[in-house]
Length: 387
Image (tube, rainbow, N blue to C red; front, side, top):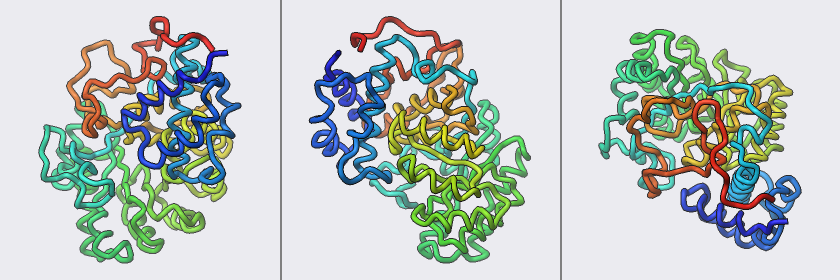
């Protein structure tokens, strides 16, 4: 049996890439470390009950995020010990590529403070040629053309946030609604249905206004409308979903598998979204995806939390554990070739989102998490000994 010191070496690497922070670090040191040090890291499922404390075992709070980081580290060690990519360790691939969409943010989006708000959009900090947030607000048609030229045929935008802040999500005027719909009109006018468009609502609205906005989006045929209301009342989410023809997608902030069961039991959602660093790591995502498959509901991965989430989500989207995958999310700032579709050509110039959070620009994910070229062939022998 190999003691678990390797896990905390891997975890320190994950913490350096901002996979977890704040109270999550306290939970790892005070709850997980005393249990896990000295144990075999490859017995991943055996460790699961001990990665949560007496409180914090549901939701997406600090304990869940700390547990998720450790679980990712454990799976990374397991992949290295058997010298296989993570997607093969998880049961093999049912698809050779994963479709992605562009989250239309800029380089400084949500960088100056740890809050979601229009004053943190970073519109005044011009850092490169891919300032997509400003582009969708002002030149959405041109942005859609640019993405299609790069081979990206899905984009997510959030033009409703300004109106939500003016009324605390309680009311949207006809004028504000018309203004927020302009980017969708420009996209459809410029490229027609060649571009799939998703509307992000950041859980800022009450139920009547969320329903009004979703219905107003119906003529534009959105791929989905995301997080229309706060995820603290399941019936409200179901009522919105049943009140519109627009597909409703939620989930990334809910937390662990039990929370997703309540969402799926609504029998009204078109898609559930998971963040591997918030919902229990690799182990949690596998369970949620398998449960969603029994409801015939597709899943998508939220990975704006950094390169580890992006790489782990890529591998999760390929094996049989996540057979029904609708689309993957891209956390990089517009590379010309999607990182989820390996290419034999040179990698285009791009700037990882994680680099804008103080981590090294030329980051490298753990080898077991990296997408290997072409057929995902295993790399050289791993450093950690076998379990």
